Length: 129
Image 1 (cartoon, rainbow, N blue to C red):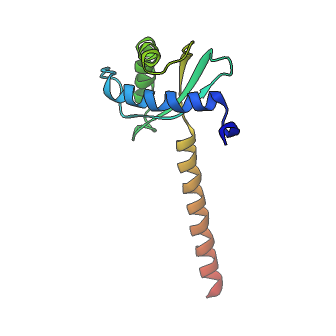
Image 2 (cartoon, rainbow, N blue to C red):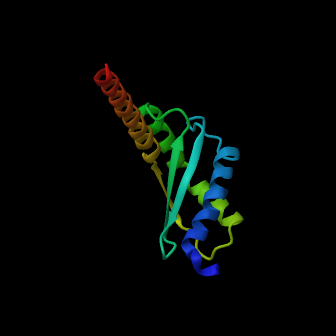
């Protein structure tokens, strides 16, 4: 059972929990919106951690996304230092923030599927008459 998850994935999960809390409660940057940390991928050598995030309700506003990216980038040092205090690791990875497009892509795909279903229903309804 213990071997099911790699060490880096367990560390990533722990970092994700801590980062979500730190960003929500301790980062006081006014540029920062409602950020959700979706995933943290940690390199095998713990040299860096890629943090994938989304911003609630602001997926279609590039200027807001850029402000959030800048706010997170400016808070990297603070977040890394606080993570080192909370998570006991010999080496704390460098943080790299990336906006997670998967949520936007998923909703776009869902809308396309819904549209295709409506089109099929319309075509099938016209053929029955």
